[in-house]
Amino acid sequence: MDYLKTVVPSQLMAERGSNLVVINPGSANVRMGFASQDVPFNIPHCIARHINPQEGEEPKFSVRDQMLNCRATSSQNAERESAYDIIAALMKIPFLDEEMPSPNQPLPPKMGRVDGFSSQQSRDDSKFTWTNVTERSIKPSTSIDRSVYKDAEEGTLPSTSGDDNGHDVEENKYKEMIFGEDALKIPPSESYCLSRPIRRGHFNVSHNYSLHQVLEDLRTIWNWMLTEKLHINPRDRGLYSAILVLGETFDNREIKEMLSIVLHDLGFSTAVVHQEALAAAFGNGLSTACVVNIGAQVTQVVCVEDGVALPHTALALPYGGDDISRCLLWVQRRHHTWPNFQTDPVSKPIDMLMLNKIKESYSQIRSGTFDAVALVHSYDDDRSAGHQKTRLSALNVIP
Picture 1 (cartoon, rainbow, N blue to C red):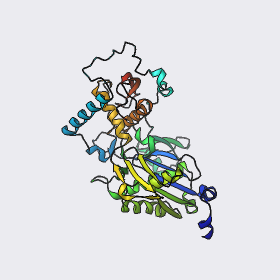
Picture 2: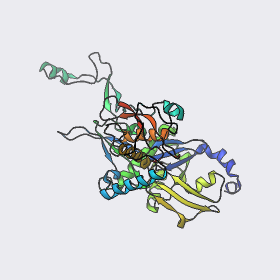
Picture 3: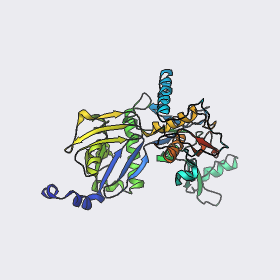
Picture 4: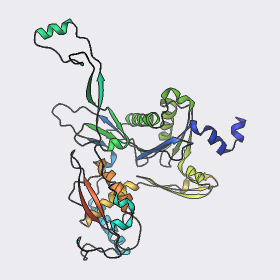
Protein backbone atom coordinates (compact mmCIF):
# COMPACT_ATOMS: atom_id res chain seq x y z
CA MET A 1 0.00 0.00 0.00
CA ASP A 2 2.89 2.39 0.75
CA TYR A 3 4.25 1.73 -2.72
CA LEU A 4 0.87 2.54 -4.35
CA LYS A 5 0.74 5.85 -2.45
CA THR A 6 4.16 6.97 -3.63
CA VAL A 7 4.40 5.53 -7.15
CA VAL A 8 4.26 7.91 -10.13
CA PRO A 9 0.98 7.42 -12.09
CA SER A 10 2.78 6.88 -15.41
CA GLN A 11 4.93 4.19 -13.83
CA LEU A 12 1.88 2.52 -12.29
CA MET A 13 0.12 2.50 -15.67
CA ALA A 14 3.15 0.94 -17.32
CA GLU A 15 3.27 -1.77 -14.65
CA ARG A 16 -0.42 -2.47 -14.23
CA GLY A 17 -1.91 -1.16 -17.48
CA SER A 18 -2.06 -4.60 -19.03
CA ASN A 19 -4.14 -5.86 -16.10
CA LEU A 20 -6.36 -2.79 -15.92
CA VAL A 21 -9.55 -2.68 -18.03
CA VAL A 22 -11.27 0.65 -18.71
CA ILE A 23 -15.02 0.55 -19.42
CA ASN A 24 -16.77 3.67 -20.69
CA PRO A 25 -20.48 2.88 -21.22
CA GLY A 26 -22.31 5.38 -23.39
CA SER A 27 -25.83 5.40 -24.74
CA ALA A 28 -25.23 4.35 -28.34
CA ASN A 29 -21.69 2.99 -27.99
CA VAL A 30 -19.53 1.39 -25.32
CA ARG A 31 -15.76 1.82 -25.24
CA MET A 32 -13.60 -0.80 -23.62
CA GLY A 33 -9.90 -1.57 -23.61
CA PHE A 34 -6.79 -2.10 -21.56
CA ALA A 35 -5.32 0.94 -19.86
CA SER A 36 -2.13 0.34 -21.81
CA GLN A 37 -3.98 0.63 -25.15
CA ASP A 38 -3.90 3.91 -27.06
CA VAL A 39 -7.30 3.32 -28.68
CA PRO A 40 -10.11 1.29 -27.07
CA PHE A 41 -12.67 -0.85 -28.85
CA ASN A 42 -15.72 1.25 -29.73
CA ILE A 43 -18.76 -0.99 -30.20
CA PRO A 44 -22.47 -0.14 -30.68
CA HIS A 45 -24.07 -0.71 -27.27
CA CYS A 46 -26.78 -3.15 -28.30
CA ILE A 47 -27.74 -6.79 -28.47
CA ALA A 48 -30.16 -8.65 -30.75
CA ARG A 49 -31.75 -11.85 -29.47
CA HIS A 50 -33.43 -14.43 -31.65
CA ILE A 51 -37.12 -14.85 -30.90
CA ASN A 52 -39.48 -17.59 -32.02
CA PRO A 53 -42.51 -16.06 -33.73
CA GLN A 54 -45.85 -17.29 -32.51
CA GLU A 55 -47.82 -19.61 -34.74
CA GLY A 56 -49.36 -17.75 -37.65
CA GLU A 57 -47.11 -14.69 -37.26
CA GLU A 58 -44.65 -13.55 -39.88
CA PRO A 59 -41.02 -13.28 -38.68
CA LYS A 60 -40.12 -9.64 -38.12
CA PHE A 61 -37.18 -7.67 -36.80
CA SER A 62 -38.24 -5.47 -33.87
CA VAL A 63 -36.56 -2.69 -31.92
CA ARG A 64 -37.06 -2.29 -28.18
CA ASP A 65 -36.34 1.39 -27.73
CA GLN A 66 -37.87 4.34 -25.92
CA MET A 67 -37.11 6.55 -28.92
CA LEU A 68 -39.92 4.83 -30.81
CA ASN A 69 -42.36 6.62 -28.51
CA CYS A 70 -40.93 10.04 -29.35
CA ARG A 71 -42.74 11.40 -32.38
CA ALA A 72 -42.73 15.07 -33.25
CA THR A 73 -45.95 16.97 -32.61
CA SER A 74 -47.31 19.61 -34.97
CA SER A 75 -45.99 22.39 -32.70
CA GLN A 76 -42.53 20.80 -32.69
CA ASN A 77 -42.58 20.56 -36.48
CA ALA A 78 -43.53 24.23 -36.71
CA GLU A 79 -40.70 25.07 -34.31
CA ARG A 80 -38.24 23.16 -36.49
CA GLU A 81 -39.41 24.97 -39.62
CA SER A 82 -39.01 28.34 -37.91
CA ALA A 83 -35.55 27.44 -36.59
CA TYR A 84 -34.42 26.28 -40.01
CA ASP A 85 -35.60 29.50 -41.66
CA ILE A 86 -33.63 31.56 -39.14
CA ILE A 87 -30.46 29.50 -39.62
CA ALA A 88 -30.81 29.52 -43.41
CA ALA A 89 -31.18 33.30 -43.44
CA LEU A 90 -28.14 33.83 -41.21
CA MET A 91 -26.01 31.49 -43.35
CA LYS A 92 -27.38 32.95 -46.61
CA ILE A 93 -28.80 29.66 -47.83
CA PRO A 94 -31.44 29.90 -50.60
CA PHE A 95 -35.02 29.14 -49.59
CA LEU A 96 -37.12 26.59 -51.39
CA ASP A 97 -38.80 29.16 -53.63
CA GLU A 98 -35.48 30.64 -54.76
CA GLU A 99 -33.85 29.50 -57.96
CA MET A 100 -31.40 26.64 -57.55
CA PRO A 101 -29.01 25.34 -60.21
CA SER A 102 -30.26 22.30 -62.09
CA PRO A 103 -28.38 19.00 -61.69
CA ASN A 104 -27.09 19.30 -65.28
CA GLN A 105 -25.56 22.73 -64.76
CA PRO A 106 -22.03 23.07 -63.38
CA LEU A 107 -21.81 24.00 -59.73
CA PRO A 108 -21.08 27.66 -59.04
CA PRO A 109 -17.67 28.40 -57.47
CA LYS A 110 -19.12 28.75 -53.96
CA MET A 111 -20.32 25.15 -53.95
CA GLY A 112 -18.08 22.19 -53.28
CA ARG A 113 -17.52 19.38 -55.75
CA VAL A 114 -17.49 15.74 -54.79
CA ASP A 115 -14.02 15.23 -56.27
CA GLY A 116 -12.47 18.30 -54.68
CA PHE A 117 -13.97 18.46 -51.22
CA SER A 118 -12.65 15.36 -49.50
CA SER A 119 -11.01 12.10 -50.36
CA GLN A 120 -13.65 10.39 -48.20
CA GLN A 121 -16.37 11.34 -50.65
CA SER A 122 -14.93 9.21 -53.42
CA ARG A 123 -15.50 6.11 -51.35
CA ASP A 124 -18.88 4.51 -50.88
CA ASP A 125 -18.73 4.21 -47.09
CA SER A 126 -22.50 4.29 -46.62
CA LYS A 127 -23.10 0.87 -48.18
CA PHE A 128 -23.64 -1.98 -45.75
CA THR A 129 -24.37 -5.66 -46.21
CA TRP A 130 -26.97 -7.54 -44.22
CA THR A 131 -25.73 -9.66 -41.33
CA ASN A 132 -25.76 -13.41 -41.80
CA VAL A 133 -27.94 -14.54 -38.90
CA THR A 134 -27.22 -18.25 -39.29
CA GLU A 135 -24.22 -20.30 -38.33
CA ARG A 136 -23.08 -23.80 -39.13
CA SER A 137 -23.24 -26.38 -36.41
CA ILE A 138 -22.01 -29.95 -36.59
CA LYS A 139 -24.13 -32.68 -35.10
CA PRO A 140 -22.34 -35.94 -34.37
CA SER A 141 -23.69 -39.06 -35.91
CA THR A 142 -25.82 -41.18 -33.58
CA SER A 143 -26.05 -44.93 -33.72
CA ILE A 144 -29.40 -46.26 -34.97
CA ASP A 145 -30.87 -48.68 -32.47
CA ARG A 146 -33.27 -51.51 -33.06
CA SER A 147 -36.33 -49.35 -32.55
CA VAL A 148 -35.25 -47.27 -35.51
CA TYR A 149 -35.01 -50.34 -37.70
CA LYS A 150 -38.42 -51.40 -36.48
CA ASP A 151 -39.78 -48.01 -37.42
CA ALA A 152 -38.11 -48.33 -40.80
CA GLU A 153 -39.92 -51.59 -41.45
CA GLU A 154 -43.18 -49.78 -40.69
CA GLY A 155 -42.25 -46.92 -43.04
CA THR A 156 -41.80 -44.31 -40.27
CA LEU A 157 -38.04 -43.86 -40.23
CA PRO A 158 -37.20 -40.68 -38.27
CA SER A 159 -34.60 -38.20 -39.48
CA THR A 160 -31.16 -38.69 -37.97
CA SER A 161 -28.32 -36.27 -37.39
CA GLY A 162 -25.87 -38.40 -39.38
CA ASP A 163 -25.90 -39.52 -42.98
CA ASP A 164 -26.30 -43.06 -44.25
CA ASN A 165 -22.61 -43.77 -43.64
CA GLY A 166 -22.68 -42.52 -40.06
CA HIS A 167 -20.75 -39.32 -40.79
CA ASP A 168 -21.33 -36.06 -38.94
CA VAL A 169 -23.78 -33.67 -40.59
CA GLU A 170 -23.60 -29.88 -40.77
CA GLU A 171 -26.75 -27.84 -40.36
CA ASN A 172 -27.56 -24.14 -40.29
CA LYS A 173 -29.16 -22.68 -37.20
CA TYR A 174 -30.01 -19.16 -36.06
CA LYS A 175 -27.53 -17.33 -33.88
CA GLU A 176 -29.11 -16.87 -30.47
CA MET A 177 -27.45 -13.49 -29.87
CA ILE A 178 -25.80 -10.95 -32.16
CA PHE A 179 -23.78 -7.99 -30.85
CA GLY A 180 -22.47 -4.61 -31.97
CA GLU A 181 -22.76 -3.33 -35.54
CA ASP A 182 -23.83 -6.77 -36.78
CA ALA A 183 -26.94 -6.45 -34.61
CA LEU A 184 -27.82 -3.19 -36.38
CA LYS A 185 -27.64 -4.82 -39.82
CA ILE A 186 -30.06 -7.71 -39.29
CA PRO A 187 -32.54 -8.06 -42.19
CA PRO A 188 -36.03 -6.79 -41.26
CA SER A 189 -37.62 -10.14 -42.13
CA GLU A 190 -35.68 -12.05 -39.46
CA SER A 191 -37.10 -12.84 -36.03
CA TYR A 192 -34.81 -10.81 -33.81
CA CYS A 193 -35.43 -8.24 -31.13
CA LEU A 194 -32.85 -5.45 -30.87
CA SER A 195 -32.33 -4.00 -27.39
CA ARG A 196 -30.31 -1.00 -26.29
CA PRO A 197 -29.80 -1.10 -22.51
CA ILE A 198 -28.82 2.60 -22.22
CA ARG A 199 -30.60 5.48 -23.94
CA ARG A 200 -30.14 9.22 -23.46
CA GLY A 201 -27.69 8.68 -20.62
CA HIS A 202 -29.90 6.44 -18.46
CA PHE A 203 -31.02 2.82 -18.27
CA ASN A 204 -33.58 2.20 -21.03
CA VAL A 205 -36.25 0.90 -18.64
CA SER A 206 -39.83 0.86 -19.94
CA HIS A 207 -43.03 -1.16 -19.56
CA ASN A 208 -41.72 -3.77 -22.05
CA TYR A 209 -38.05 -3.59 -21.04
CA SER A 210 -37.61 -4.34 -17.35
CA LEU A 211 -34.67 -3.31 -15.19
CA HIS A 212 -33.75 -6.97 -14.78
CA GLN A 213 -33.53 -7.43 -18.56
CA VAL A 214 -31.55 -4.19 -18.97
CA LEU A 215 -28.96 -5.41 -16.47
CA GLU A 216 -28.85 -8.84 -18.08
CA ASP A 217 -28.19 -7.27 -21.50
CA LEU A 218 -25.46 -5.04 -20.06
CA ARG A 219 -23.75 -8.04 -18.48
CA THR A 220 -24.01 -10.07 -21.68
CA ILE A 221 -22.66 -7.31 -23.95
CA TRP A 222 -19.74 -6.49 -21.66
CA ASN A 223 -18.90 -10.16 -21.16
CA TRP A 224 -18.88 -10.67 -24.95
CA MET A 225 -16.49 -7.73 -25.40
CA LEU A 226 -14.15 -8.97 -22.67
CA THR A 227 -14.08 -12.45 -24.19
CA GLU A 228 -14.12 -11.73 -27.94
CA LYS A 229 -12.32 -8.36 -28.13
CA LEU A 230 -9.96 -8.30 -25.14
CA HIS A 231 -9.58 -12.11 -25.03
CA ILE A 232 -9.86 -12.30 -21.24
CA ASN A 233 -10.95 -15.74 -20.13
CA PRO A 234 -13.73 -15.62 -17.49
CA ARG A 235 -11.59 -17.84 -15.24
CA ASP A 236 -8.82 -15.21 -15.26
CA ARG A 237 -10.96 -12.15 -14.50
CA GLY A 238 -9.87 -12.18 -10.87
CA LEU A 239 -6.39 -11.13 -12.01
CA TYR A 240 -7.78 -7.91 -13.51
CA SER A 241 -9.08 -4.63 -12.13
CA ALA A 242 -11.65 -2.38 -13.79
CA ILE A 243 -12.16 1.37 -14.10
CA LEU A 244 -15.71 2.51 -14.83
CA VAL A 245 -15.63 5.90 -16.54
CA LEU A 246 -19.17 7.29 -16.26
CA GLY A 247 -20.89 10.45 -17.42
CA GLU A 248 -22.77 12.89 -15.23
CA THR A 249 -26.18 11.59 -16.31
CA PHE A 250 -26.16 8.32 -14.38
CA ASP A 251 -27.77 8.38 -10.95
CA ASN A 252 -26.45 6.59 -7.86
CA ARG A 253 -28.60 3.49 -8.31
CA GLU A 254 -27.50 3.02 -11.91
CA ILE A 255 -23.85 3.42 -10.88
CA LYS A 256 -24.34 0.85 -8.12
CA GLU A 257 -25.89 -1.65 -10.53
CA MET A 258 -23.06 -1.27 -13.06
CA LEU A 259 -20.47 -1.64 -10.33
CA SER A 260 -22.23 -4.81 -9.18
CA ILE A 261 -22.08 -6.20 -12.73
CA VAL A 262 -18.34 -5.54 -12.94
CA LEU A 263 -17.49 -7.09 -9.57
CA HIS A 264 -20.08 -9.82 -9.12
CA ASP A 265 -21.10 -10.94 -12.62
CA LEU A 266 -17.94 -10.28 -14.63
CA GLY A 267 -15.60 -11.33 -11.82
CA PHE A 268 -13.11 -8.45 -11.60
CA SER A 269 -11.09 -8.39 -8.39
CA THR A 270 -11.38 -4.62 -7.80
CA ALA A 271 -13.11 -1.70 -9.46
CA VAL A 272 -13.21 2.08 -9.19
CA VAL A 273 -15.55 4.71 -10.66
CA HIS A 274 -14.22 7.83 -12.39
CA GLN A 275 -16.13 10.81 -13.75
CA GLU A 276 -15.93 11.32 -17.51
CA ALA A 277 -15.22 15.04 -17.19
CA LEU A 278 -12.30 14.47 -14.80
CA ALA A 279 -10.87 11.76 -17.04
CA ALA A 280 -11.05 14.14 -20.03
CA ALA A 281 -9.38 16.98 -18.11
CA PHE A 282 -6.61 14.88 -16.58
CA GLY A 283 -6.09 13.05 -19.87
CA ASN A 284 -5.25 16.39 -21.46
CA GLY A 285 -2.98 17.46 -18.60
CA LEU A 286 -5.43 20.02 -17.19
CA SER A 287 -6.69 20.52 -13.67
CA THR A 288 -9.15 23.29 -14.59
CA ALA A 289 -11.33 23.20 -17.70
CA CYS A 290 -14.84 23.46 -19.08
CA VAL A 291 -15.54 20.04 -20.55
CA VAL A 292 -18.09 19.74 -23.38
CA ASN A 293 -18.77 16.11 -24.23
CA ILE A 294 -20.89 15.61 -27.36
CA GLY A 295 -22.02 12.00 -27.45
CA ALA A 296 -24.37 10.18 -29.78
CA GLN A 297 -27.47 10.93 -27.70
CA VAL A 298 -26.42 13.26 -24.87
CA THR A 299 -24.37 16.45 -24.75
CA GLN A 300 -22.82 17.07 -21.32
CA VAL A 301 -21.19 20.25 -20.04
CA VAL A 302 -19.39 20.48 -16.69
CA CYS A 303 -16.66 22.67 -15.25
CA VAL A 304 -13.62 21.18 -13.53
CA GLU A 305 -11.69 23.36 -11.10
CA ASP A 306 -8.53 22.22 -9.32
CA GLY A 307 -9.31 18.61 -10.14
CA VAL A 308 -12.89 18.70 -8.87
CA ALA A 309 -16.02 18.58 -11.04
CA LEU A 310 -18.40 21.31 -9.88
CA PRO A 311 -21.91 19.79 -9.61
CA HIS A 312 -23.76 23.10 -9.95
CA THR A 313 -22.17 23.67 -13.36
CA ALA A 314 -23.23 20.30 -14.79
CA LEU A 315 -25.67 20.40 -17.69
CA ALA A 316 -27.00 17.45 -19.69
CA LEU A 317 -28.82 18.09 -22.96
CA PRO A 318 -30.76 15.08 -24.35
CA TYR A 319 -29.45 15.24 -27.90
CA GLY A 320 -26.23 14.48 -29.73
CA GLY A 321 -24.73 13.00 -32.88
CA ASP A 322 -27.68 10.72 -33.69
CA ASP A 323 -29.99 13.73 -33.71
CA ILE A 324 -27.62 15.56 -36.07
CA SER A 325 -27.91 12.61 -38.45
CA ARG A 326 -31.71 12.72 -38.21
CA CYS A 327 -31.53 16.45 -38.85
CA LEU A 328 -29.52 15.74 -42.00
CA LEU A 329 -32.37 13.58 -43.30
CA TRP A 330 -34.99 16.18 -42.31
CA VAL A 331 -33.20 19.01 -44.13
CA GLN A 332 -32.77 16.96 -47.31
CA ARG A 333 -36.43 16.01 -47.34
CA ARG A 334 -37.36 19.65 -46.80
CA HIS A 335 -35.29 20.56 -49.87
CA HIS A 336 -36.66 17.56 -51.81
CA THR A 337 -33.14 16.26 -52.45
CA TRP A 338 -33.55 12.88 -50.73
CA PRO A 339 -34.49 9.98 -53.03
CA ASN A 340 -37.88 8.35 -52.71
CA PHE A 341 -36.57 5.79 -50.24
CA GLN A 342 -38.31 4.61 -47.07
CA THR A 343 -35.47 5.82 -44.86
CA ASP A 344 -36.39 5.53 -41.17
CA PRO A 345 -33.43 5.85 -38.76
CA VAL A 346 -35.64 5.27 -35.70
CA SER A 347 -37.08 1.86 -36.55
CA LYS A 348 -34.38 0.76 -39.05
CA PRO A 349 -30.95 0.87 -37.38
CA ILE A 350 -29.11 0.23 -40.66
CA ASP A 351 -30.52 3.53 -41.98
CA MET A 352 -28.98 5.33 -39.01
CA LEU A 353 -25.63 3.74 -39.83
CA MET A 354 -25.91 5.07 -43.39
CA LEU A 355 -26.89 8.57 -42.22
CA ASN A 356 -23.97 8.65 -39.76
CA LYS A 357 -21.52 7.79 -42.55
CA ILE A 358 -22.94 10.48 -44.85
CA LYS A 359 -22.83 13.02 -42.02
CA GLU A 360 -19.21 12.22 -41.21
CA SER A 361 -18.21 12.50 -44.88
CA TYR A 362 -20.08 15.62 -45.94
CA SER A 363 -21.47 17.76 -43.09
CA GLN A 364 -19.32 20.64 -41.91
CA ILE A 365 -19.60 24.15 -40.53
CA ARG A 366 -18.90 26.88 -43.09
CA SER A 367 -20.53 30.11 -44.20
CA GLY A 368 -22.66 30.35 -47.34
CA THR A 369 -24.28 27.54 -49.26
CA PHE A 370 -22.66 24.15 -49.62
CA ASP A 371 -23.85 21.21 -51.72
CA ALA A 372 -22.25 17.87 -52.43
CA VAL A 373 -23.05 14.75 -54.41
CA ALA A 374 -23.53 11.58 -52.38
CA LEU A 375 -24.63 8.02 -52.97
CA VAL A 376 -27.72 7.21 -50.92
CA HIS A 377 -28.68 3.58 -50.34
CA SER A 378 -32.07 2.01 -49.81
CA TYR A 379 -32.52 -0.78 -47.29
CA ASP A 380 -36.23 -1.35 -47.82
CA ASP A 381 -35.96 -5.14 -47.93
CA ASP A 382 -33.52 -8.02 -47.60
CA ARG A 383 -32.29 -7.83 -51.17
CA SER A 384 -29.10 -6.10 -52.20
CA ALA A 385 -29.34 -2.43 -51.37
CA GLY A 386 -30.52 -0.10 -54.10
CA HIS A 387 -28.77 3.23 -54.45
CA GLN A 388 -29.15 6.62 -56.09
CA LYS A 389 -26.71 9.46 -56.56
CA THR A 390 -28.15 12.72 -55.30
CA ARG A 391 -27.09 16.26 -54.51
CA LEU A 392 -27.37 17.00 -50.80
CA SER A 393 -28.19 20.57 -49.84
CA ALA A 394 -27.49 22.88 -46.89
CA LEU A 395 -25.00 20.46 -45.34
CA ASN A 396 -23.63 23.14 -43.02
CA VAL A 397 -26.98 23.66 -41.27
CA ILE A 398 -27.05 20.26 -39.63
CA PRO A 399 -23.98 20.61 -37.35
